[in-house]
Length: 449
Image 1 (cartoon, one colour):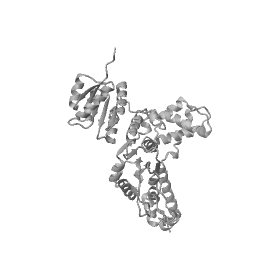
Image 2 (cartoon, rainbow, N blue to C red):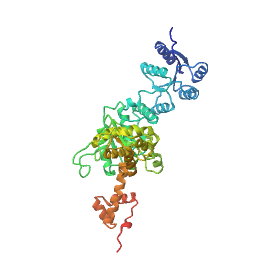
Image 3 (tube, helix red, strand yellow):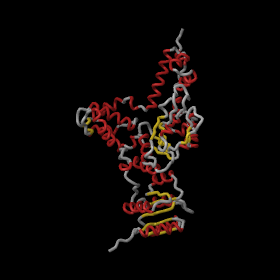
């Protein structure tokens, strides 16, 4: 007794493509049900339920996403595959977030569609590509939120779209940027990262764009910047929200013209790189405060990826803690297999304001002090109470050091800016800017006669 061919509702207002899809599906063992509009598709669905739906995105009348939303509202387990000749990465991300089973951009290989359809008919529920663990083995997660984010990464990685990663300090923005690079066609090229908050303003332009010989004191030879070093690969600009405004304008020109001009050079150099940036700041608020260029924001934020904080994905705490034990225990010469149940419970209930960076620090403290095969609750409690300063981000630690340095220098010179600037080897104008940045008035340090 033969099994009936799975029926597939195919929706497209292009008659030729509808006929071609029908032939391909029929030859692959499916029963195609072709219709020319979303409205006709809804009428067919009211009569009989297919095993899957394939729909074009852009159609006259109701489009493919609107059709999906109508289907999903009444039958969320019915797999819907969207095809489009007008595909954009933001469309694909929106589709994945909404629960669309799959998204293919024309022209596509028939084998791609048939493989996707086979999974749809076989499972009857959304499964996008490989499991996250197989696609991104370096990312440890058991969280549905993170797996949905990694689905987005898989979609955007294949494109050349600029990506902005947002999330709190310590959530793993650089690791996600590396995942975008490793899943992209540029994976064989360099992945070059720079923290825009960690390099003084006077040096940042040279680091990014390079400099010519003699461009400034100490420039004894020409030097390539990070954009040239990353040729054919990906540039990751971490803490882009802390980039000075003057340099933001130069970065915008690089993105527009796809070429850099080294400091002190009259010649521009073409660059072929993809930009991934990250920040913990609210850039829209920074734009309102005139601290970030709106035109640069839209250039960088073609696709936005948001990493949830650790407190919103507590199912990751256990696997991450175990991963760090396996990584850090040998470093401290310890044989540790994991955590005592009470210790793991403490980890699960902690707030983790420093996110994964703080968790790693807590685990390392425990590994360094542990004398048993399982880390006890007492060590975890001690590490959580200590709230070590190492959980500060580099930018936060640098900012704190800078303020303390200025205070000590102004105390030493009795508030004499000229002398303080000389000792700091900075000109008066720059030194005044630093004082203003930290709201330090020279009058506060004047010694009384």
